[in-house]
Image (tube, rainbow, N blue to C red; front, top):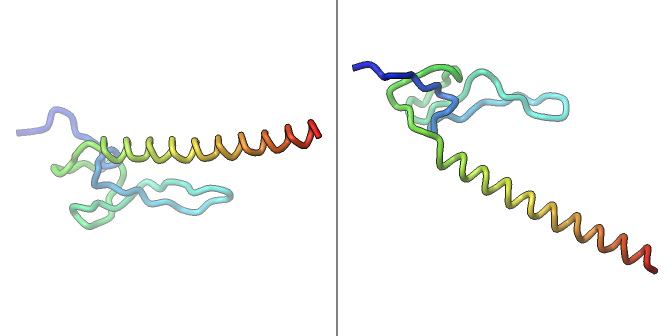
Length: 88
């Protein structure tokens, strides 16, 4: 029996992308590691072990939210200090 639509590894919970260091940021490569097969695979490769990446995506979203909340607190503290200095 064949899948209706093959899903790429880049959207699988078992896939971890590889990155290269660029000027000022990291760049995602066209391959990564498969935790199930324990090998390097192309991002667009497909296999029978594909599982949705929902938990990872939610965890990343929550981590980003926590980081942004921390940055907002720091900005508010800086704004408070600048206001106090201005008011004398």
